[in-house]
Image (cartoon, rainbow, N blue to C red):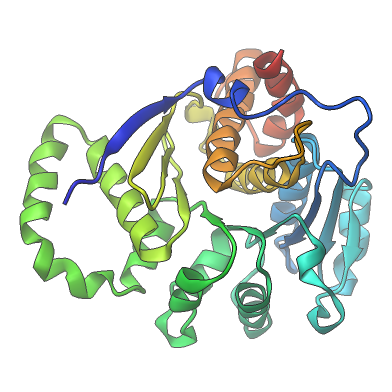
Amino acid sequence: MEFFTNPCMITAETVKNRIERRNREIHKGDCGRILLVAGSEGMMGAAILAARGALRSGAGLVQMTLPKELFPIAQTAVPEATCLTRAFQELDVNRYDAIAVGPGLGTNWESVETVKHILYDYHGSLVLDADALNIIAKPKYGLFPVLRERQGETVITPHMGEARRLLDGSDYAAKREKMKGTYSQWAHMQQADPAVDRKAMAHILAEETGAVVALKGAGTIVATLEGQTYTNTTGNPGMATGGAGDVLTGIIAGLWGQKMASGSRLDAMGAAVCGVYLHGLSGDLAAEKLGEHGLIAGDLVEFLPVAMKNTLT
């Protein structure tokens, strides 16, 4: 089994070649209508960071689905976004150019039903992170096959712990015995290059889920079902802080929903590679100004416009 075809590094040129300058006649509808299914009592910070990430990446319209009692928090923290209840039977989810699900969502039964609804009914560009992945990873909900077979492109953004839970909840565990030789090869390769194990895991996840995988960590790896591998070149240890991944989720959704001057939008792989690069560069710019130790996720949002300006001009 060959995993690492066409290995590439994600650089500024990678982003420049995919994100076009804006047309002067563009309006907010062209810049993407984004829905964030995120947040719960005690975890509204994750939803707020994701919303800010989407807005600062250039999204034209951002809406958040929340329990109604949490509206005041969201509307105070992110006045540019609007709030909707999670009455999905009254909401046409397919009117959105991209949807992101998971940051701070929680894993209670209402959250399970929410993830199930999006997987079954939404056919557009979907970013899954955090609790959405934790819910899908639980075999008792039967959502792993639904993810694999859904219409529309999907990007998942797990860290290593979430990646392992996803694989444990898939058919992958049953395949291990058939792949012992490959595992031995990985183990040998990993002695020389510890990143090989992460690349292998990213590719297995892509195969199992049918999604583009952005496996977070030092040198975030983007892997596709076709066997392409992209390793990010931006980012620093200061980004090992709560909420950084929520910002990334928002950035990828925000970039993915935008219409280019040519009228096209990024594909899943393009949204993922551009998102992880700009996310990491925001962290690098923040660390240069503030230092690594005091870096917080909100700093990534503040430096994101500068990262985009520096990359695209």
